[in-house]
Every structure is written in structure tokens, then in C-alpha cells.
Length: 504
Ligand SMILES: [Zn+2]
Image (tube, rainbow, N blue to C red; front, side, top):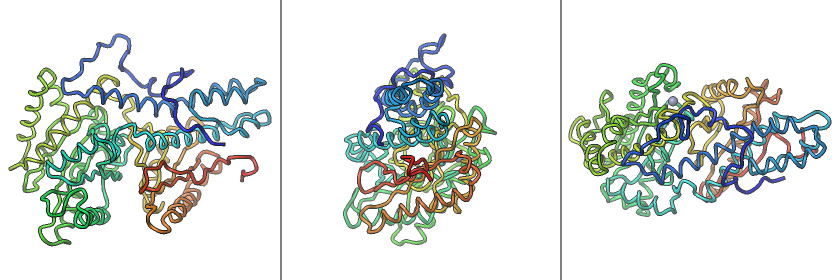
């Protein structure tokens, strides 16, 4: 049985408030809250689009438990199966596995299986929606992306390569916090933002080779740079507990480690290639409570000061009563003041643009989440393992464990499983794990290798977390995607059988 092709455009009256609604302390419409006055530099249209997208996608995940609770009370009714399907289609946008419903009269509803099934169907629907409709207007084909690409070239950058921490609270860094079209950005998330220098050098070589051979995005003779950005994070509300786990919630250590990794990358390029080859570097910190950024403005000679930055939140406050033009002038002034030497003009303009974009995001968090998210810690909906997940751009939706083999990222995975023991297993719900490998369809045999990678990781997870699998508390979906085509992810297998005869 296949689910519906798309998510419902609007949530249909859920029977219980969603997890996010429950967690929202001072959100819009909260009783007694003062009406929010938008900042003059806020892009209100973009904010409305982002909020609508978040509510639509996360809403689907968050309506699963209330729906299952509703089914639990209906399961003895004579027309249960038909009513259950009707409710699932109306509230989630897809059907439930019929044979699980048909077996209800024997053993009662298998809620663990149904829960995992629904999470996987919601993930598939999100992927179809993202690649089918470009809801964030960030695809390469979108005119907004092309315009921003030209702006970047004018500022002196032909490629943006951003490494945020893999923490689910940074999954929206590109599209929301920095407001950059995702199609322009090479995003590689790693625990603690500790990206792999050797793999980054390979990607740099590919980029420069393409400029040389095809003049894409511009000719190699043009004096533009490859810009590598690290985004570390911290928590303003609970700095010693809700910061970056990979750096012991020590934001100074997270920033220092990010800077060291950036410098190693530039050193690798300069040592390995001739003719003055180099890259530009940028270090950004992000407050996971307010989404405000702080930018360590680099000098033209690459000096980056760990102790000084432009504070996005202070800029928001200080420019809130200025005209848009005065606000932009203040941003430019702060960027120039924070530079520890002579500043590159293009870099200065790029940072000013990021800070202006970030004001919209700070405003969004203020208007819809009371200024700071109430889910300060982990509240992810599923674990994503492997390579890919280009469509995940929502905060706290996915805990990422980027890996090619379970062994290489066993500790990342163990952390994810521990988080979900608290989030799900403690409530009797299974841990949904999406194993995903993207591949290049133009490379012979790549699809088969991606499937084999999925299967290998699944087997390794079964060995490592056998107790959870045996108790039905860990379910897996195997998923691949051809990154050369704009197609959604394709499901290869699921630990929940599609029919009773397929059960094993
Ligand atoms: Zn982190």
C-alpha cells in the first residue's frame, strides 16, 4: 500500500495540541502577550513562508501520537478499520498499513509498529514535498537563488561551503538563520562542526576544476574565492548544559576548535597547490535559544579574533527604532569596527548581509516562540544516519549521524540513541532511524553501492543495538537518492513489513 503523494497543505483540526503548541510559552496569540512589533529590516513575507512550512511539516510528525491515542480508544468499534484510515488520511495525509489494522481484533493495535510506520511516511512525504514543490524557494532553478548567486559573485565568492554542528538545533542554519538559498550552499554537518579536512580539500579541487573546465559558476581566471564557513553553537539561557555536546558545552572551546579546523583547511590548500591557491574563512557562532548569530569578522590577512565578534542580538535591539537605511548603516559600521585589521570590502558586505538576514530570524523567534525556543534541548523526531538529507531544514527535526560506516561514527550514534531513549523509549515508543545514502546516478554502479551501504549500516545497527531491535523499540527505513536528479528520496526497505506474508 502506498501513502498519499503529498502532505495536507493545512493541518485538519487535530484532536490534541501538537508537541510544539504545548511547548510554546509566549507564542503569537498567547493570552496576555503584547502584540509583536516587527523589526524594520524584517522580511515578513519570508517569515510567514517559513512558519507555514515549519507548522505544516513538523505538525504532521507531531499529530502522530494524538492520532494513535485516538485510535486506541476506537479500536473496539465495529467499523474501526475504515474510521482509522479516514482519520489517518485527514490528519496525516497518508493511509496506515491495512493488515496491522485488520489484526487488531486478535492482539490489539501494535502501536510501536504504527508509530514507526507513520514517522517514516511523514519523512517520505516531506522529501516528496521538498523536491517536488521547492517550498523554501532555494532550488538552483529558482530566480531568488540565481539573484543571490550573482550577489555572492559580486562580493567575491564563487562557492559557499558551510559546516554547522550536526546537532538538530542547527538543521535550519542555512535556510532560516542565515536566510541563504540552500541550492547555493554546500552543507556538511558534523558533530561539533568538526568537518573532515581531507574530504573538504577534495570538494575544493572539484569546484576549482569545474571553474577551469566549464567556467561554472565563473571562470578560474576571475579573482573570487571559495568561502568555508564553520557555525559553532552555544546556549544563552543555559550555557553550561545546552551548548555543544561535542565541546562539553564550552562555547570558547567550540569556537577555538572551529577556527583551528578552518585554518587546517586553508593550510592544506596552500601546501598542496601552487600559484597562490587559498580559500577565505569565516567563523560564526549561533545561539540555539534565539537563533541570533555572532560573527567573528576576519581581516583581509585572514586573522580571526576569537574574543571579538558582531553580536546579532545587540544589532537587532540597537536598530529596532531606526529606518531600514539607518539600520543597514549601523550593521556596516559594527562589522567594520569588529574587524581585527584591514577588512576585505566584499567580505564586509557579505557579513552585513548575513546579519541583516539574521534579524528576520530573530524576529521570527520573537513573534512565534516568545523570544527563545522552549525546547532548549533535544526534541528531534527521528535519527538520520548516512550521507544526504538535503531536504532537512527544520530545527530539531532530525538528529544527524553522518557516516559511511557505523564504526567511524559509533559515538555520534550512541549519543543519538541515548537521546531517543529519553525522548521515545521512556514513553514506550520506538526509535525511528532513517538510513540514507545519496549517490550520483551518472557514476556506474553508484546506486547499487548506495543500497549496499544502507544494508551494511542496518546490519551493524542491529548488532550494536540488538536489545532495542528485539523489543520492537528500534525501527529502520532504508532510503537512497540520486543527487544528480531533482528527485525525492526513494525507500528501499523498512523494518515494518508491508504485508503479513512479508513478516519475518
Ligand atoms: Zn554541537
